[in-house]
Length: 305
Ligand SMILES: Cc1ncc(COP(=O)(O)O)c(C=O)c1O
Image 1 (cartoon, helix red, strand yellow):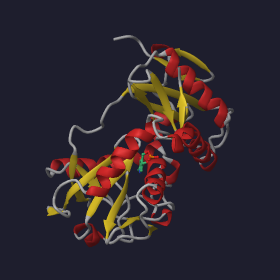
Image 2 (cartoon, rainbow, N blue to C red):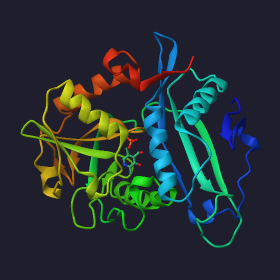
Image 3 (tube, protein in one colour):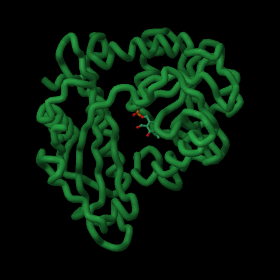
């Protein structure tokens, strides 16, 4: 396999040149935050498109601010470096991009204070569908989602993904494909790495930011497409667990997961037990939008070549 290039501390270098110390605060305490971005390859146009790069880097800088990990780059600079990195790796396939900001110093205590140990790393890898199934069977987790008063999920902190991993582990060990979190107050929150939607009486409903979700960039797109392209009413409101059982459709959205139908929750069939009409339509529109084939949304796509 060709060695990959990464962005590290202001330059593009070979991945093997990056050295992350065993004593670093990121490794020992999970002091870091990250983003997950995709670049979509369009075979017909022989073009790779970074998808909503600006929104992802705006969210990363907001996370950095909240976590006291300021970095010396603007959104524009981070977008430019990302395009350079994709070019340097000569990708001709759909790619997952992972920017990480972390505390790199060896200091023993888990302090966030001080800018001298902030590191910025961006790596990428080819990624087709995240899961090898068209539809998912999920279970509500016995693990509750972390809240904004504990480990703010909106900052995409690396440490928070232990909460996600525990929920996924439980779901997989119990024979399901993925978990769904409830908040501490018992409302439906999100998946371990994706937002959740239900369709009820023709309305598209999704939990509000006040239910401790990550305000997903795919979630935002799904809401926009449902309103503009399908003429649906979109509602952000708290959802109860049993509403999942009685919805016409349930589906996940996320950069890695894209738009994926949920056909069973806690061993109860959702709707017909097959991918729903709305989810299917949104998926089809999503395919076009992410590859700059829909002029209305072409501004979300940054051509790499
Ligand atoms: C916990 C969590 N929720 C939701 C999402 C979906 O967000 P986005 O659509 O911006 O990828 C992600 C993925 O980043 C996530 O990790």
